[in-house]
Length: 306
Image 1 (tube, rainbow, N blue to C red):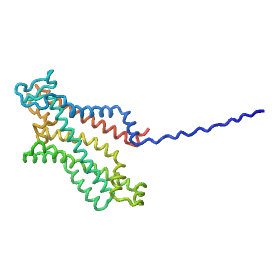
Image 2: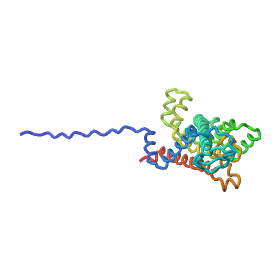
Image 3: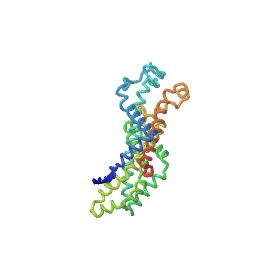
Image 4: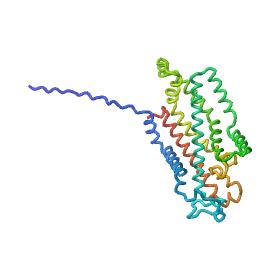
């Protein structure tokens, strides 16, 4: 009598391949429709500002009295300004300035804040006290009034417009780093007690390598979120300064000094094409950046894992 041996083949446990942090972030971010919409609009605005002028025939146009304050038409889709220049082209060129100022000041403030915050949290002691008291002093000074005072000084010194852009970037970064430095310091104080940092001490790694190769990379998600939101704040600050005549000054265009066309009742009521487009550009760009920043914050939050 034949006996059939029934062997239950053990099912192999499916060993799931670990998913990297960035892939998890991408998967969660992709589900956030508002954040994705903000990302696409921001990319479209960057393309509009930096690629759009290449297709415009009015980039090098000069003053034309025959085209002063013309309403939108087939030739000039957003009309012309008081000097006869194409508003759409100037909106593109102004976007280059405003976005560059926002991004550059963000990069500089993140570099300063992350390095100083990491150094303060890693060494503690007198270094921590000095750096954090300096940050406290800068944070206690209202940002906008300080920018107004510095902008007024630049105007009094008659600083050329092409140099004002770089000075404004520096000003915005100097008032933006203290808050980030405190956040980074708090994260580093927590991370320096983790086993992987203790392992670097056993291996005899230098302090520089511990900070720049092990601590700062582990707080990069925090830096990414803060940096995204800082761009929006920098764009608003630059626009406010330029609107008040203390930032980027004509003939260099920015969204802020384009809105300055609404400083008289005639232009405000009868020529909305002069100030509505730059105002809409600022509003939509800042909203898109904030939506993207909120989405990144949720995607990078471990508590949001599903």
